[in-house]
Length: 155
Image (tube, rainbow, N blue to C red; front, side, top):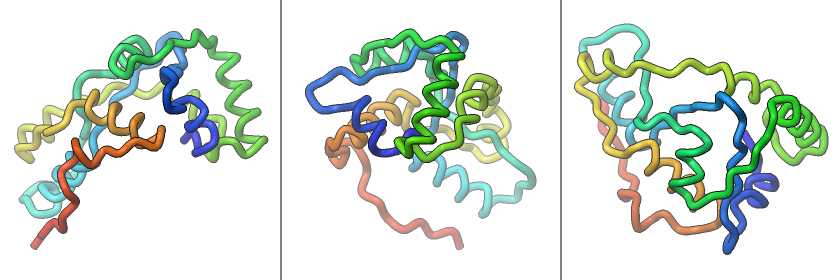
């Protein structure tokens, strides 16, 4: 959502990542490998319908900043919306400014159905996914923490 230019400024090497501290912001994430595992289970199993897929813990600005040794930057909603519109207009980030409201209003997901019907459990925590994202965004190498990518046989 943030785009390379803006994200690289927020996660510059040698500098603590900036974490916008918006009141009420709480998001869930999932590692790509875990999402792939859930999709594989859903398409190969005798199940129907949609599943919520997310890893614990819920990421708040305080949790995220603590995990990546980041600096929390207090940001009121109005300022976040203004910055979102401005950075989009300046082509610093590719997402429509409405993503801020989406992030602030997103419900927290209950993954109990995926766990019960798919037998799915995330192998990576939300903090693992966040650390890899920040490291990759700052130009770091995540190969030492990520399993090698391999084809998934869904047949």
